Image 1 (tube, rainbow, N blue to C red):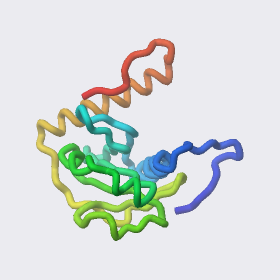
Image 2 (image 1 turned 45 degrees about the vertical axis):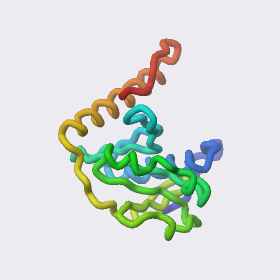
Image 3 (image 1 turned 90 degrees about the vertical axis):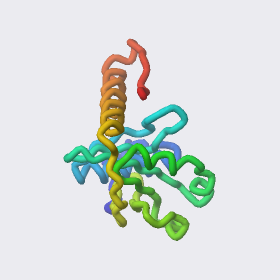
Length: 159
């Protein structure tokens, strides 16, 4: 991963997890994935990054800024039903031996990310895939519309 600053005035997100999200989205974009951050696939769950690949594959990436952040996560197994592959994204200082076997691993920083261990595939059922893709598309479109016309209002989360 190359660390570089796009401009001297670049402002990074304040929270460590958000900085990891930024790097993950950049790294996955280089692999031809598009991402939506903080996506709600169903009530009670919010994934850090959902990525849609060029062949329609759906990845969920949970960003963990440290041991305490990881150990306090009680919902991650609920995300497995909403993706084809599940990944953890951590920085280089994270103790990766804490992460469960059978999950993917992405090393990230605010500028880039590298897939270190590919997650095993557990393909979504066609019915679930339809729900996930609809939620992904509607969330992304609503956020774009909100950026273009912020005074209009409206919601940005769909399930």
